[in-house]
Length: 112
Length: 121
Image (cartoon, each protein chain N blue to C red):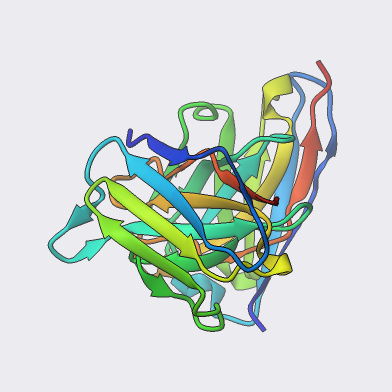
């Protein structure tokens, strides 16, 4: 099983600033045809929403202030110019080695 | 629009059973892999089970294997999860989520709002 570890658990950021979230896999989740890592946003009482797949491809309609990067075992989600609606919990998901599909434990982005 | 709507949650005593449903609409349900993912109160996301678009493949998390059964009725665009021998640690919101088109390999792109299962300890 691929273990996904996200850091930090909580990130306190002021509106307008940049948040950098990390996701580390216990083994590579990339191969020659792709980087198999997705990012989700979840707000209280809501379902997760897909933001990014393939480590860096934004879903249609997701603002450009969200960007993903990384490969192998180290991945980053960067949110620039944080807006009020961006304060939420963010999860990474690996879909390279399954089953099981495995999520990180989440990073909560809170208002500083 | 593409939509998934879960139902069937509730309060159920330990060792009893429950059946969850997930109705899909706005897409050709029979062409997509489907998953169940759960979230215990205040906790993160845990993948529970998946079923291929053609019902030829299923798989389960170790924590539920042998107790939960995933199935689907493509004629009714509905996904199911049969929960047997429930335990207190099965208490969670259960989300259904759409996987890739005709391929087990991929991420979940559309999620329902979830249905809550509570198993008192």
